[in-house]
Amino acid sequence: MQEAKRIIKKKCPYCFRAISNDEIGFLLKNDGARFRSPAMNEMMALKTDRTYLDFWSAMGIPEEQIDADRVVMDNQTMSELNQEFTASGHELAKRHFDPESCGYSFSVREGALTVYSNTMLCPYCHNVLPHHFFSYEMLMIGLAGSVASGKTVYLSSLMMREYDVMQRENLSIRSADGNPYDSYKLEMERNADRLWRDGICPDATGKTFRKPVFLEAAYRPRHETFHLLIAIYDVAGELIREHAGVGRTGFLRFMDGYICLVDPAQMQLEHAVLNRQMPDEERVLSHLRLLPLTEQISVQKMSNENGCQVMNQGEFLFDHSVSEEYLYERKSEMILDAIRAGVGESDLRNKYMALTIAKSDLLEDLGEIRAYPGSQLLFERTRAMYGFMNMDHHFLRQSVLKKIFDQKVFRLQRNLQDYKESGLFAVSALGCEVSEAETAEGPVLKTVSRVNPIRVEEPVMWMIMKYMQERRWLD
Ligand SMILES: Nc1nc2c(ncn2[C@@H]2O[C@H](COP(=O)(O)OP(=O)(O)O)[C@@H](O)[C@H]2O)c(=O)[nH]1
Ligand SMILES: [Mg+2]
Ligand SMILES: [Zn+2]
Image (cartoon, rainbow, N blue to C red; front, top):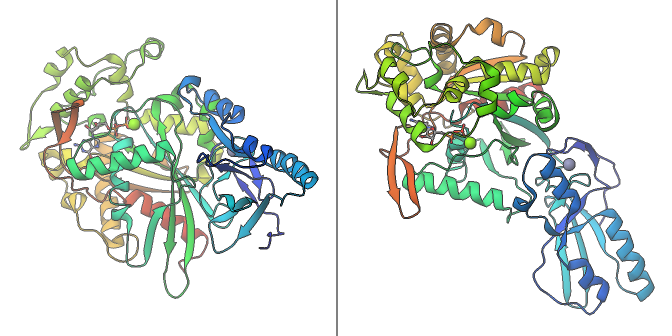
């Protein structure tokens, strides 16, 4: 097999350092095989991967929660190993480039046993790189929103039935995760499965940096096929605000675009909660914590049943299960301001922004939204079969959403004018409301009917389309 001689540099999707194809490492799987050579047994033994541990602990994960017992093959280990192998007349460990496969692979043989891996690692942070990392360009998307705005449910909904909502006649999407056994990837797939089968929402996630979800897109406009990797990051709003632009949230600047989720609870709807003055920031920061289930439920209660408000503002404010911190998070411009601060005013012109009303099912029967001419377009569920989305309807929706944003959320002009491109969306990951249900593992939030998303994929599709347009792939 031939080693590719060309040096390619790419940005690591975790630590964002430039890495080249001649310095990548590999993750090996210890399957318990015993070798004759002591050097081989030593190589295959699980060891604490300090580099990996340090990376995630700097990201705020407690050390005991990081599974850092791994078998890592980096350039240094490989050359040490090969020195021993040369001395003992053993066949050498090699790195291969296989253009037909997913990138680089590593192998070493002893007798009938072969150790093989195509799970590539960043040499600086030891995180697993996606398939085809050195072959395809990567679009990095930050999925941003305040606590409980629906980010985790959004991702799970996209992932249902292997990205079913994103498949088109001329576009196919699949997972590009480099490690089929990655525990976070498996957890996300389980979440998507439970959501699809039983309508059960995933548990609330903490406010730490999480691994991105990697997808591979193959687009066939005519006879050609274009490939693209997509990394979607779950960007907790509190994380950006607390550390805007520094350390853990530095990654925000590297994104190509943002999908910013606005929860209907953040909108100024007639009987809604938000006209209340925000509590002072210092006090809020010192009390900030994750929303308990009861608070999530009380937000759901504010939504409308058959067009009439279940709970009015007065009642809501006397409901002490809703904390002040939560109300603070509800301020809808907070996330956009935090992105602006983290990315830097002047760099916004290189970024896409998909400003997206999430949980649009909560608005579906609401008179004050229904009163906007063309609002039925917001709740359309038909999925495009060809191309990215129905562009005619997309353009029509822009003008309806612009009015709704200006009147019910905030003045758009000030918030969006500095981006390279922006688009307005209204989606629902579930397509219906949720209620509390009991399971063997305790209480869960479960959809009241079958999950039936409302064009949940559109913000991602739009960004893929913009990215490809910019590269003139769509001409
Ligand atoms: N009605 C409705 N509720 C949703 C939808 N998506 C999320 N939710 C609710 O919002 C809660 C918080 O969502 P989650 O994704 O955990 O928020 P995150 O903190 O931004 O990750 C969920 O438990 C659901 O109850 C939706 O599309 N429609
Ligand atoms: Mg979450
Ligand atoms: Zn890295």
